[in-house]
Image (cartoon, rainbow, N blue to C red):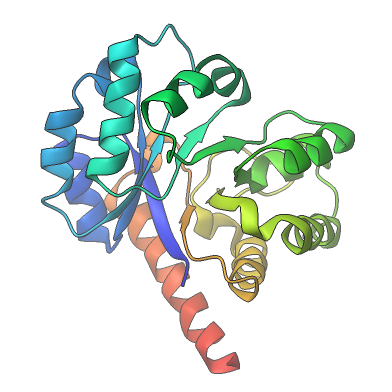
Length: 235
């Protein structure tokens, strides 16, 4: 069963806020400095009943020691994936796999046209699907039905390579990185399709920092609970 997750910088207050709101999974935003704090982060994270994924730093340079820390943190927390941007994958994947060949480096789609999107899906060894990026940058705010057609297509072909999903509450023409409940129709359709394909890892409400507060996090959890109950009734 898929799990709704939030995303934050791993400090105690963020863990506590997420837990209080009802989340039980999180993706860590990380930079090179935070990677070097992997023992502190792991010790803190183990105090909470969460599942975890890591977001590899978006820019470098990343030292060899920091790369070793990324691999260690992945193992210590039994993470579902390391989300990574294509330029950082191209630069650091070889070294990361030399450190630990079992690391799941799930490349995220960004500003890609349809051809490049298909190439990303075909050529990447593991995928992080960002639904907002697909809708906004690849499909240019097409109708929801078109987004869902493309989602069906990628899941039919590549569900086995999908390890992570970003699902902000995007609406065409709206602001990016809104809480997932802000686009409940789209999000419900996406969740239903992911569940139908047996996706069982983290779906992240990748909301901006101002939304990482009780009010919005609780609304995200309430939305997910409603979807779960409705989904169970359909079974």
